[in-house]
Image 1 (cartoon, rainbow, N blue to C red):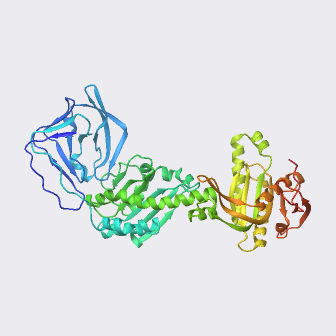
Image 2: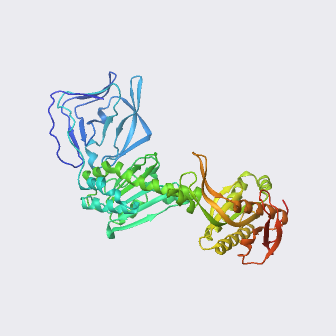
Image 3: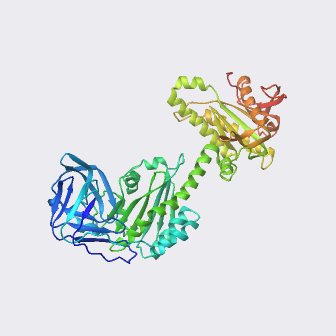
Amino acid sequence: MRFYLSGMTARPQLTSNDYTIVVEPLAGETVASLGGEVLARSNRARVMYETRLPPVVYFPEEDTVAKLEPASEHRTFCPFKGTASYSHVHAGARVLENGAWRYPNALPEGQAVDGCIAFMPADGLQVTHNGSAIDTILGGNISGPTVDWLLREAWTAKSPEDLLAALGKRLVADGVAVWRLSVLVWSLHPMIAGRHIIWNREGDTIESRQPSYELMESPIYQESPLRHVADGLGGIRQKLDTNPDEFSFAVMEDFRKQGVTDYVAMPLPFSDGRVNVLTLASDHPNGFTTANLGLVFECSALISRLFEVFALTSNATSLLETYLGKRTGARVLGGEIRRGDGDVIDAAILFCDLRHSTRLETELGREAYVRELNRFFEVATDIVNAHEGEVLKFIGDAVLAIFPANQGNQKACAQAVASAEQIVEKLADVAGTDHYPLSSAIGIAYGEVTYGNVGSRERLDFTVIGSAANIAARLGDYGKTCGHAVVMSREVAEAAAKPVERLGALALHNVQEDVEAFAHSDSGALAAS
């Protein structure tokens, strides 16, 4: 886009550190053309100078010559001027998609260009003016206490909640009339959609919520400014005394009752492309000033990076806990990431195998079978976690869990046996549900295992290696043939709360010595596989 200037005069350099918007009329004829085709011709055009942006010429709509085709699907947001609607510009045989914009509901800072059209920069686009010169305002850098704090001190915050509270207080101290500040940051967690943190100036209170995916599907979220911004529909500014009807968000009436006069929701993009949301609400009679919003707007990229650091740590923790378990995930996050890293520990090992999987998949169909398989994993995991154990991995349709002997072998074995008993009962009890009764074969053994990383140089697995893990799996296999749901080694049986039945010394596959095995005497018969 080229401006042809005549009678150029140098504009004064701005020394203010505030974000500035200046609109000036252009005396004389101003013409916009594209490839020789006139788009607009006016004696009433005006030019907008905005901090760190090139000047933009606006033409009154009635002085537009080109055919403008509404582009209803495309909108952008400016916290100062409002939401821009776009049109495709027809210039002879050429069409500039989304080539012109206007502000149909201009905010106070944009009232001077209300009812005017501006054209997007494009190859061959020329704006000529035969009156006063159009020049870029020099200077316009944003600095001050808030910027200094963001650069020097904000990184010391220990949590995203601390960061948001400190940011809110810093903005207030810098003269920004913030009554409420919030941030919505998405997560990588199987049950938690993200974290919504809210700071209120009154009482200097902080609230942190972790909405579930189900809540994000509710009308409360779907009809909120947060969804609008997060879905890439642009930011929102609603001055409740200027454009109260531009957006139909029910929450605005609640804010109005609390004394809010100005509300802004803006994108807070992360480097991976996800769009998070930053919101500000003011209770000042005049709402936010241009300098107020300019400060936040200019600092938003840095604010985003600070919150992204916390999000990356949280996501790493969530992913490691989800795929490795809480205890193992913490070890990996703590630096045990090399092949061979690990410990030799004593532990009870539980191996739980879902029985009749092939038949279930055939009878139920893939979708229903996967639902029941997930229930099996969920039941086993919840019960193992409740007894201070940890599920190390899912192996096909089986669960491998560990109960470290941190408080002695008796407790570890008792926790494993109690877990097995409850898993068997819970899987079979489907009264009042639409689930199918499931059965499992569980083997439990106790012994010394290596707990750590094994694998190739580029692909590691954090697991347990040792005869106890192998024996637990083989005892579970034996339980399928002998009709017992839970089979255990001698060390484990000695910690069992219920009476046990001796099954004798068993020769197990790939186990060098015979293993003396036991089962609950009242564990119930199982049909042989």
